[in-house]
Image (cartoon, rainbow, N blue to C red; front, side, top):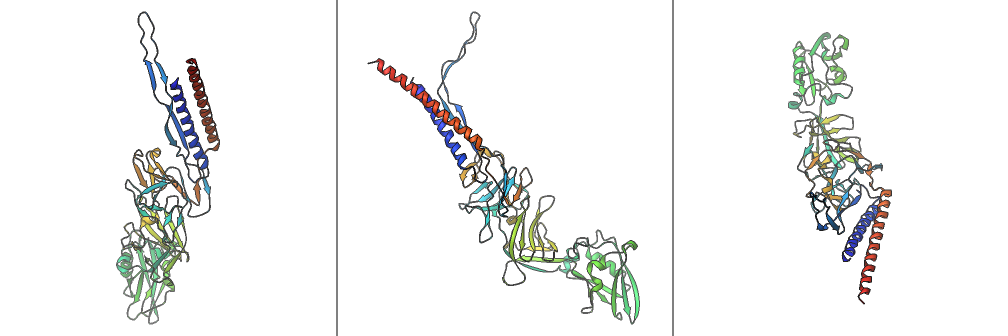
Length: 465
């Protein structure tokens, strides 16, 4: 009889725990990216009076004779399924469409995970959560080692543009020159004309560049000089090609040969036909432009670019737009390597290389910005159920999480990032009300058993009077 009291008490405790979990779910029905919890029950153990017997020749077998002693909470399981997204229109808000987690660094230096993308910029340009934790970035496509480099939006940068230095420019392929504009896909194969005026007598010279597909700037300058007939000399200057008339030649004119006649776009692409004689030479427009990005030393200088807004792609790569319309972004190669790309106010795209070596057209001072500052680091956890909730919509990696893969968004099984949206709670209110009723009935039924056992004990007490 006494055991019935203790057994019913386990039922009362179980119902109370279930109701507590339900109340937490209902309280968080509007919490961003909240994950529903569920109580899982199991029986405790059994008082075994007999394990049963096997059958014999003369009698059948008997089943075990066991009396259960109640119920216990086996686990509180979270449903980590993705919920619907809510559009906010705010650039700093982000949601993950599918599996994966944002990684953040809290004030104690711990790396935590969250799906709550309610982010904002602080006064230094760091992207932070609502509790001040810094959102983390990375510059690798995948790693088992987490980065602790925070996302940092460069709110003011110094950009110095100019012609690409000769030693670098002459080795560039003439099909990859950024200064020719979007109208021209590099220097095309073929011919163009140079007309030399020598004492009023014009000499027409046909320059054949040949197939420019795999030729460098130096290669086409050599081709020009080979056909010049001694009337001029072509040379490489920073970012451009210069034509110097030979002695006795008063002027040069440059003409395009029609494409159907085997003409190249060299004259049109370089604006050479409209270039005047300056310092004894005709020089093309800048065929390739280089730029360096460094620390601001004068906020009023025209080289200073001030922040306007930023955007995030589904791959977690960021683009910062400045007030003059120029843009600084992170891009990725086919193998997942990243590099800086700068688009100036005139729409010219200037790219870095993956090493940020200074040999590319764009160089970014690492003291100003790292590539990891502008690419979101995502995490993929083998067992999401092993995560430990620590509040503020954040989770700590638990001992039962398994391997954690740190990667970019939209690859390696991690969902893409949606900017201007937030993930809603996955609480099903109808299900919670059903669970609440079941918890209430569990408590009511076990309290009735408790009362009945108590009444029976009371009857036994009266029998002894």
